[in-house]
Image 1 (cartoon, rainbow, N blue to C red):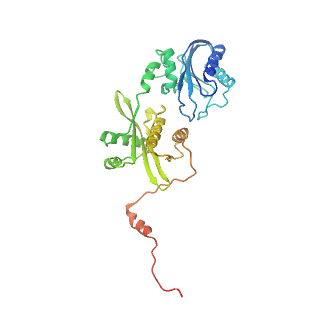
Image 2 (image 1 turned 90 degrees about the vertical axis):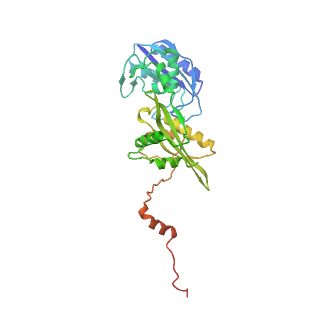
Length: 322
């Protein structure tokens, strides 16, 4: 049975960590068929200043997949990995991922094969393509590793400078996925472009050979006595395109634009129930502040009351102090 494995290291002697891991796997799991070159990549889904080295390798084995998992986890411990990912990712001396096991497809509490994130990770696909570009991924649509890599990098970020009706319709399509019942009128959409302090960012990709908007976010700049700040709003990715790291690209674009404008602080709010979104923001380095964010719905019919409160209670002279 051919076993495809991904390897990564971002602390210690990275190249040596990967070399030792391949050696130990070949001794305990099965014969090494082929190993890729080393590829350096920035951390994905985690905040770290330490670049990764990545590689992929193919082994011939007769062992059960769960037995292989136990062996590779033991090798990780032997090579100094102390903390496993628990929904969050950490720096590691070695990371050994089982990517594919023959043509098997299964999911248990401990292991899912093939690895569901292979199609979305360039740092996995590039080394795989080097050693097995014509091999097929054993999960629908059963593309080759080379085809998956070619499909991965088609998304692009743009900041429109004028309102278009096609974009307006795309915004409303995406808003419904962000919050049920949300929409923006065409006149209000046009107003976005009248402000020099509002920037709408689109993420576009091909859908059946037609490029369309698959994600968006808004950067709103505000100015106050304590300095200029920017608020990130409306971060959303179309459902079929989630899980590819595209939200991170949107946030990175927000950071770049803010830096370009000389903004030093970016703010955002997120409801506690938006678990995935909150994890995204934490991974991107946003720190949860101990503040309350409140929303108030302005009602035109209460305008007279607003005016009265604005003017204060009002005083009238009733006499002199004795």
